[in-house]
Amino acid sequence: MLRNLISTFVLLFAASLVVASISRPEEPPRGDPEAGRAAATTCIACHGNDGRGIGPEYPNLGGQHFSYLLRQMRAFHSGDRQATLMMGQVEHLTEQQLKDISAFYAEQPIAEGTAEAADDVLEFGERIYRAGLPDKGVAACIGCHSPSGRGNGPAAFPMLTGQPERYIVLQLRAYRDGERETDAHMGGVMRGVAQNMNDREIEAVAAYVRGLH
Ligand code: HEC
Ligand code: HEC
Image (cartoon, rainbow, N blue to C red):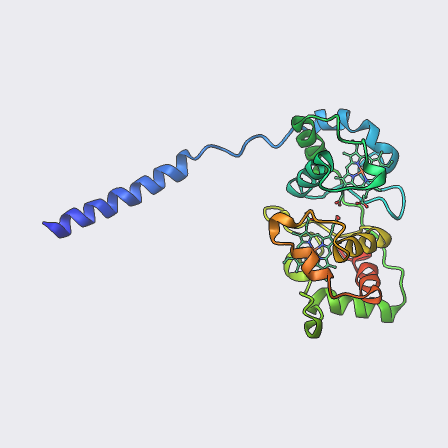
């Protein structure tokens, strides 16, 4: 009797899980890329027509993950991420517009780059990317940013592929020096990675990332 009751309970429980997973509401809409294109006209001056940054300190946005873009836009909006040139760029936008613009850039093509540094620098950079610097407690980048540098959308690990070398250097230094704290909700993961890297290591890995795809 008791066994029957328990097995009925288990069955009911399992059935309720199935129903719950079927009836789970869909993800909220991610934003409308066409509305995003219209709202992003002021961004073209620095991020190009399709999200390709116009200079060495301007990040490419094309093909970047929606989840990551939205988080950064919110951080600029709230002031949690500060950058002189981004000041005043997104403050007037609504949450819906932040989503629309993120959806627009996520759909644009990835701007791949070509590595230009000397071979020994690129080899050193590749080693750091793939294996980290175990003696210094620097984790391998590959684990989160993926072998091709495409990152991980669901986890909001950004794509690094093709980013300008100078932009990567500046961001790694900003994490290292505690100036960029947008990783706070992830336990300060990038500050942890960068804190033991010297400039030579940062420059090497940035040079490697530039041509990674
Ligand atoms: C005057 C130049 C300029 C304009 C205009 C501009 N940006 Fe930027 N943007 C930058 C720079 C420079 C950075 C890098 C900031 C840093 O060093 O942290 C940046 C960074 C970003 C990032 C973070 C990218 C990353 O990989 O973390 C996003 C997202 C972004 N901008 C979106 C926008 C949007 C959307 C607009 C228009 C509403 C816009 N930007 C307008 C210069 C500009
Ligand atoms: C444990 C996961 C993890 C590891 C390991 C890791 N990263 Fe990251 N990285 C992240 C996350 C998460 C972010 C976004 C944090 C934020 O929102 O500021 C990020 C952001 C970055 C950014 C900023 C991108 C942009 O567009 O502004 C750069 C550059 C970067 N990582 C380079 C590296 C390099 C180089 C290594 C290896 C030395 C590395 N990361 C190792 C998870 C990781």
